[in-house]
Amino acid sequence: MNSATGLPSIEAIVIGASAGGVEALLNILSPLRVGFVLPIIVVLHLPEERRSHLAEVFARRVALPVLEAADKTPVVAGTLYFAAPGYHLSVELDRSFSLSLEERVHHSRPAIDYLFQSAADAYGPTLAAVLLTGANRDGAEGMSQVQRRGGLTIVQDPDDAQVATMPQAALDRVQPDHILPIRGIGRLLVELERIAC
Amino acid sequence: MQSNYSGERSSEIELRLLIEAIYLKYSYDFRDYSGASIKRRVAHALSQFECNTISALQEKVLHDPMAFMQLLQLLTIPVSEMFRDPSHFLAIRREVVPLLKTYPSIKIWIAGCSTGEEVYSMAILLREEGLLERTIIYATDINPRSLEKAKQGIFSMENVRTYTSNYQQAGGKRSFADYYTAAYGYAIFDKSLCENITFADHSLATDSVFSETQLISCRNVLIYFNKNLQDRAFGLFHESLCHRGFLVLGSKETPDFSAFGSQFEPLVKQERIYRKS
Image 1 (cartoon, helix red, strand yellow):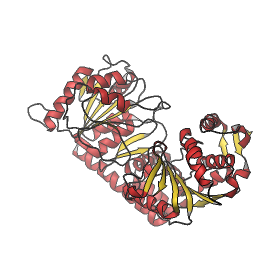
Image 2 (cartoon, one colour):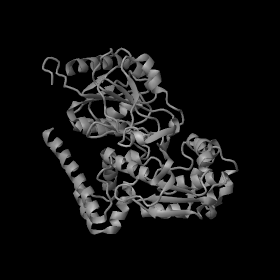
Image 3 (cartoon, helix red, strand yellow):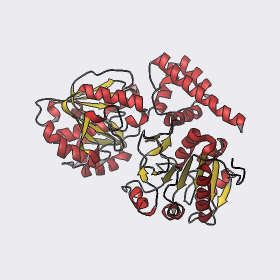
Image 4 (cartoon, helix red, strand yellow):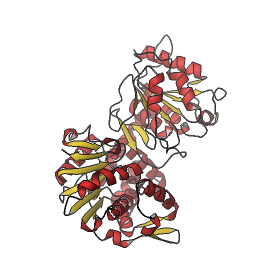
């Protein structure tokens, strides 16, 4: 915990987003500067058939290196990762990625819940989890696990979200550390990174 | 918060003990499986078995082999489909089949075949390419119930529409319905596809190589293994494959990060088709 700001020392950020998520993510991630040290791991729901160009789309708009998270590769600092479409993405206790084809969760694969739950196990109180706009209930269970593990929980203000269902479902389940509009979430991530350095 | 945190630790200990108990009692080795997925499967099993703790589940499966067999169904992931990733099968047809045709007889190993969808896909492809009659397919899995289902070759009609579309995109040459008979909501696949298929119990974690092969297909199995076990599996594949033999993997799997990275070269990298170098 940083005594001046009251913010914890964070080692990784996970973000979950669904309907309206591309725009929300661009708003949060494009202002980040070169040299941002924390790893950011994103599950964004997309129609499964579509071959994902997320990494390419974001690489053009974001200063950090952008990768699709590959099975059994270590989570590297300062990298923005996207979950591969069609596979669940988890973080193992040794902080490497693993993929799986278990059943869909809330009709989704990748599921935000699985990323959040596994990252909560891997990072405990040094994880920050961010849940954004979306039209289903994925992520609420994951948020609750992050909170049980002492991680920092951040939910987009449903009034600010393009689709309020997903952030609202999380708020029905947990009382997060921060409820913020997109702009505030972007600023908070920058602040968390400043403290982590 | 502190007591919560140590509570979670206990469940990690219990999970390791359960996995160890299963190994000692039943010789099924999940010790080098990826932890996050196994943890979710066991959590799911707890609700199915109505157990409050993993220790309670452990007691149950240690003393009741039937309960263990039920648990095994939950620990293995039977999510599969025919001609999954059609472009992969199209690439096999175009890039691998012409080379396979140069062999007088062919042995193919489908490792981790689950309920058989990959096996029937391969058999249909080989038949259309005129290779099935001179091919022996070994289809292996650790789960006896999955193998039994694979042998029967009966799949729910619900999924057949997807399979048909996959088959067409994979370069299928006939009507997919030629390969099955529909009855009571099920598609019963042509038995003659199975004449040269041997279904067998085999574990990539504990068993060794049983035959020389020209092609090995192991798709969406290795993602459930940690690096150690992936290395073991790649070692078995390398040993089993003939000179310049083919290894085909799932769409997110690669030998690149394994101890055998330099021993396989990509033939069609995008479709995860490799050759022993």
